[in-house]
Length: 93
Image 1 (cartoon, rainbow, N blue to C red):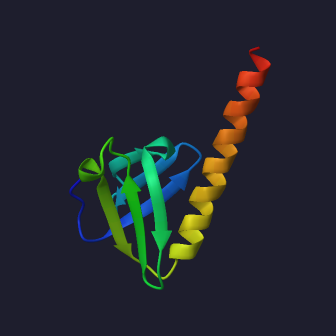
Image 2 (image 1 turned 90 degrees about the horizontal axis):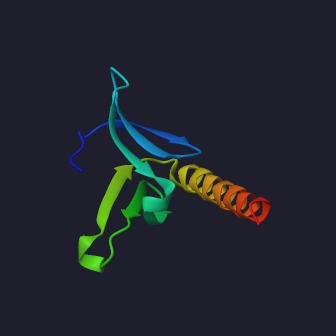
Image 3 (image 1 turned 180 degrees about the vertical axis):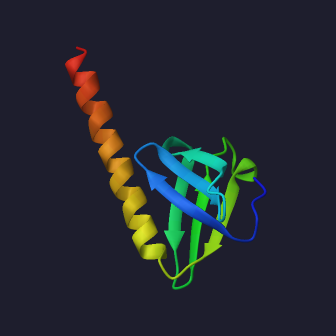
């Protein structure tokens, strides 16, 4: 996934969208299920995209001071989706 040096990150209940900064055009979409892991440091947000083997994993890194908030929002959405899927599977029994 080749992205420009500067993008906007949009996080929603279905995944992450990387947007062009001026037009808001979606450049890339990553479903939450495609995220193997996500982390942050003081000035970097990192997301590893799922690959069946380690060498096939793709990594997205971005410079930001808001990495902790980004990670928290992603975690909350992943938990929300997991609960909704669990409740849906219980209702279908």
